[in-house]
Length: 310
Image (tube, rainbow, N blue to C red; front, side, top):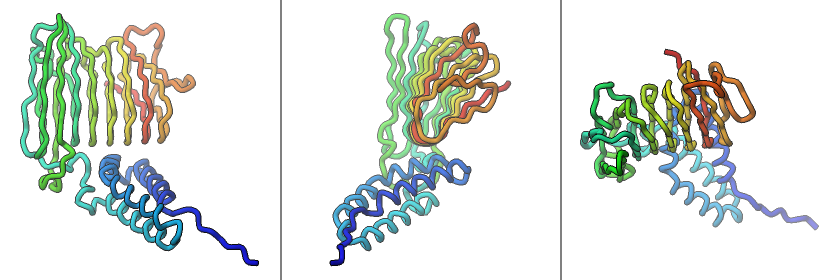
């Protein structure tokens, strides 16, 4: 008696895993920007539909599962190539509807906490000039439907400033246009700062070299994030990896201990780093006057450590 063969699995999950691996490979080779993951995350309803249909018909009809897998491959390919309207590069996906000024004076405080919750586009942080009396100053591009909340309060000699985007993932008619959208912000370089940043989706450059930093809490979001560490002081940094490339640059003369936990994508140390287990150390960390303790909780994508020369 001939034994019946039963088809037990679908093709959608394997195609998703293979597709993700191919995109990672293209990212690492520099052929596709890491911002493409912002596009792919926007397509999560398509993935849910494909998985649901595969569970419904794929196990009974192998041909149906193959067709679903093929359709999923086409959708992913179009997204990577930018052929779909939603696949516009994450840093340029939202049309600039207006630009708002960001401004808050030091207001006599001796220290401050700045919390920045970015939406999508390009985020640039740097230090203001030494004679600036501002805690934060700059400009923020907003898309249609996006709002900007600026809130400031004092508690004794401490100031607390919040800058938050809301509605930046809305899909109005301007969403399909290709126009650069960025936040360009400067922070007070003399005031001791606690900095909290949600990088959102896109490309972020945090040039903190000249800041008087006490603590940095960074959620990397989706895309490429670059952090240039302050060259002076003793401070702590915590980075929660997202999807994309994370680059941490330590100035020469700064002793840094960078602990990396988990993540997919690997760690590349370029410069004068010594490996100590899961930690990468530069300089005489124990005795240095200027030193940084950095903890990175790896996400999906490579982590690059560099020595930043003058």
